[in-house]
Length: 273
Image (cartoon, rainbow, N blue to C red; front, side):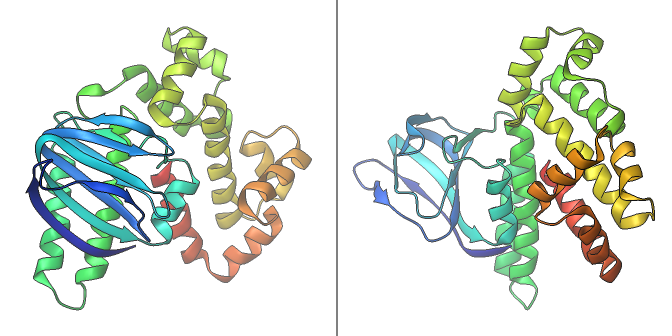
């Protein structure tokens, strides 16, 4: 992760407007005060309220401006981690707006990015990039209803149960019953909050469990599949290869050559999820 530039200023519509701009990198615009609008081919035209965050995507023409005035902080950044965020569906071009509400962690994190860059030195870019990584995780938490004044208790509880149980988790219907929420209601709220269906999130939890077992145990692949909650080892091998790009045995061999690298990748994926 790297940060290319960072700035802040106040703007009025007659003085300033972005029209059909295309960036080569990702960007963030934090609207601290005031309001305006944003438009792209992916999102259409949307209103931008105060205390909100706009995510700008590379190679996507976009326009935006305040309706009367606003004060903003902006940042351009990029790297493999943020590309993975988009590939995982945690940043989506059709939903570039994150309303922060009363959450103050993200403005503080933005300030910490600026402070790292202003301090300079050989570690400035790397440190700023690490702080942007954390900022994006916090922003996803707000979007998912896991932070701030929009927390969805049922979704939070469902995630905790799924993550704790991994392959032993109940089915989506059993989960809804356990939480005392209608099945269709939980499915809708879960997708609205996280961007994932219940089944997709459960599958990701199973795959995380499987990768941990492959990297840190000598269990046969069939046993790994069973402990991760896959009843069919052939299905496990097929879905693992389609998601990870390599079969389970090759993933394990790669881990034996560099388990530390896999530990970092596993930690990163848990953060993204």
